[in-house]
Length: 67
Image (cartoon, rainbow, N blue to C red; front, side, top):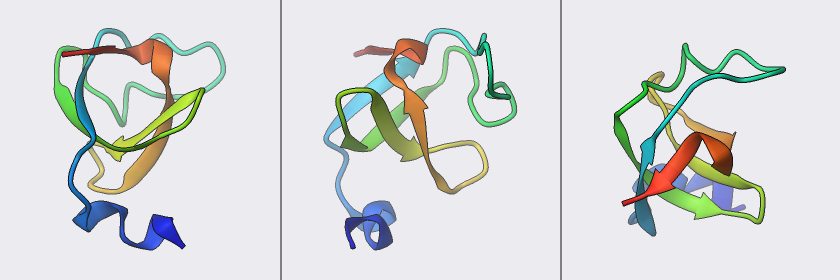
């Protein structure tokens, strides 16, 4: 049940959003290009971070670059 404590966990890294051009999903409402985000969890394909809505969301890694 790790997803219940993500907001309170320390960040494992910081990433910067480099684009919000999604093919399938509406991402520009939840991410801001140029803004930095703290990654709370990571898988092979996704970063889980607190987005602009204040909730934890999973986003493809290709939207970000590691700082």
